[in-house]
Length: 166
Image (cartoon, rainbow, N blue to C red):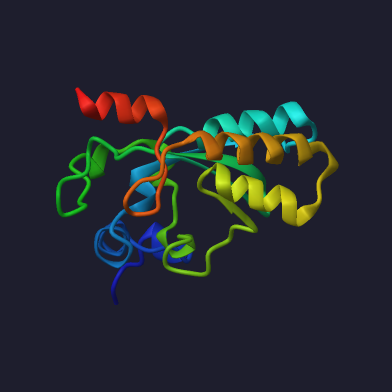
């Protein structure tokens, strides 16, 4: 009779099974960002801070059952180009304790709110008619009008345009 591993006894996948799920099924997406728990936005200042985060590349703000989080997109330095962890046997405990079966990319997306840029924020504030967010929504609209139009319909910050001309 085959001996069951601790992972199997606990209903979790073995390390090998989890490595396959991570590298093949979802392409190690959780190894390409970190999340930072943030306080729920309750004031105009809080919404303005979220706006500030969203005007920076690689940052999204989400809300799920556990609350609000900032997502910072940054690839783990241990991933190879095939999404295999080069330090798998010696990976941090956060990675070791993560159960790939609960991955948001292999199941339903758990976000109730997902803000990827300040236009998403403006739409969210307008849709929810949040009193504390009205001034922020107005400032977003005014700021967006100041940005030059791009060929794809996208707008870029003036400092990014200046940097691209050099």
